Length: 444
Ligand SMILES: Nc1nc2c(ncn2[C@@H]2O[C@H](COP(=O)(O)OP(=O)(O)OP(=O)(O)O)[C@@H](O)[C@H]2O)c(=O)[nH]1
Ligand SMILES: [Mg+2]
Image (cartoon, protein in one colour):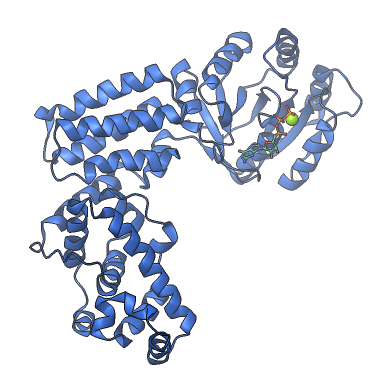
């Protein structure tokens, strides 16, 4: 399961619960364990984390002005952040950076990404090809240097990487020199020897091991081996964009004490990010930071306490539209839904543009009261759709789209039926969100 989705789902056990007690905390922890392990986070680490979270979450002695819910959310956020390592602050100064790692880990691509990164911060950069093993390594880096608009140094046909570096250092005057090195299919002495030779000539300021997120927790062992052999200043995790094992790789590296410096988030040269575990967790959970996450927990809790229970058993077009409208006010709907314990509502359904809502509004206003209460009427004869389209000044396709969306959400709600508490909350939230007066009038 996707890590972000899994974490949101786990957290929703708390944020969506009526009361937070030992049972809910345990359920949440169980769900957390499941998602972390399926993302290849080390089992022992997961159990340590669970124990800590459970203990801290159930310890209510330190609740100062926050609800138990907020407290648990904070504990989870802090613990996740802590297993995923610290953030890194790059030196924005003259320096020599050497990249190393196994075959296909992303070294060459990352060289260009780093050049782009430092160049954007006002430093001049150059790329040096010290990979004499891989055919076309020279051409690949040269092409990338053109993309990044930085000079390139290398010598085709030369078999000694140390020599290439020595020559390049004589002529390269750029602030940041980034050196690409050869890979191997596995960690071996030959590679270590070669890296040592390059290091002796280059005297790099930074030695970054590039690891693909795909290898998950094995990243820990790899970081350890390379660190012991050649000494690392940090690790760059590539392909964090596409891997279901990113959490495993990051936590394993963090456990070795090595710092994750950057992460690769795609194939393009702009796709490099400075690593920040808080930002990473925030993104997984769908919030910029802990504050905005807690803020949302609070708002939802307050919304819940508004108006009395007016739950209607039937989900109708009227309720649907009211919800879309109300949700617009509550901010990113995906987050609101996940707070309520329903993290899986399709995204496109939740991101209705203002313009679309206007269209919907006129459609709903063109419907009869019966139609709003019973959408199945639209399946009994085409006349109705044509009438609504005409009345609302939209196409029949628009009406059909709207009905289709309604039906999808209706299906989801039927699924929620088992979960009456959730439905009740959504209903309350809608009432709490309040409809603009004229709209509310128009819909009765
Ligand atoms: N999606 C994604 N792809 C990446 C990322 N980084 C690298 N790649 C791709 O991974 C493949 C291998 O990247 P390279 O940079 O050639 O890897 P390398 O470590 O230099 O490989 P060798 O020189 O053969 O050892 C290429 O197709 C890249 O486009 C990343 O962050 N995200
Ligand atoms: Mg390469």
